[in-house]
Length: 351
Ligand code: NAD
Ligand code: DAU
Image (cartoon, rainbow, N blue to C red; front, side, top):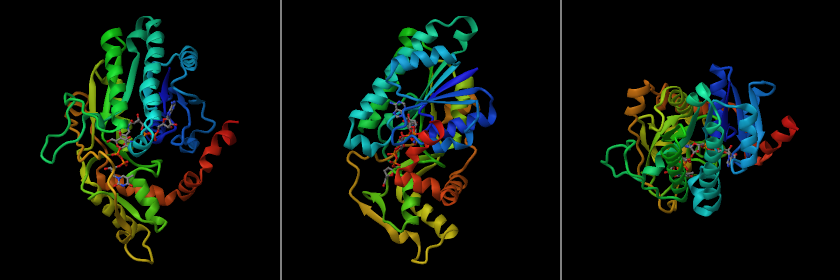
């Protein structure tokens, strides 16, 4: 038995693969193009482990997808591969349209052909799990109820629009062709291996380097934070027991304003790695706001709790402490990401 994971060298994908192989001997075929966000060092503990088969390749490559599916006959596809950074989508939306829309379309078509030729139990048990985001629902006002699975789609950035388009394709491939899909829409993740272009890891690495901590606008935008391995456990629960064709929202019931996140990181660093120059909050710098910046996201996670019994294991307090400690314990990972040396890992370890 095997599963095909796309984007398994990225932040959430690599945490998912590590988490999966902790609890299962089912082989993971990991297809990742190794964009700037893909880092095989995240998976170095799997070097030599036959349960992890890494394939460098693009989800837009239909011939490659057909070959992988025919060769490995996975019982599920877990689709993480995407361009994921909102700021990058504002500066260069084309890559987001290509990977998130065209890539998902290509993967759906390959999955449809593969699943269509399966028989009996193999066919009945196959699942296509699409990993998506709460950003497709748009922006909440202060007193609005959190997003449920029936909220209308109102994406506001090129990133969220491309993810919304991919969600619609996945939905249509189920309704029109019967492909057994599952979709999850998750809130902001944080934890180990998070690329330091995103808020939490950027604040940690900048603070340690004595650099400014750039807070967009007034810093009062709200996100709903979930520790990354809780996202992995939620996806496992959906694959195992989710109803085909359904959408599951995943979140940690943990809304926080950006400025409070930054101050929490600063306080933890003051405790764990005090700076001779004084408290890290001195580095907070308000900068020009992100264009079209969504004000608030919040997830109503009652459906996945009710139907699948899933709940996060970490609180924000436990998760953020682990995260800050992980960055303190892994300065080499940070240095190689910052210098670009992490990109040599493929050649060194995979030839
Ligand atoms: P990431 O940017 O860290 O990783 C994306 C991975 O996809 C990288 O390894 C990259 O090399 C790979 N990739 C990109 N284009 C590809 C292509 N054309 N073919 C094959 N591989 C390709 O992203 P992430 O934060 O780990 O997010 C993973 C998924 O989860 C995305 O679909 C994202 O939309 C979704 N999501 C992310 C968050 C979050 O907070 N980070 C929250 C909810 C949902
Ligand atoms: O909500 C889920 C989404 O969360 C995922 O779908 C995306 O892939 C993921 O990147 C994330 O999107 P955000 O835009 O919310 O994450 P980011 O870390 O870029 O920013 C979090 C908040 O912090 C946001 O309100 C913008 C703000 N911010 C971000 C950066 C990088 C700052 O104030 N300063 C910064 O330097």
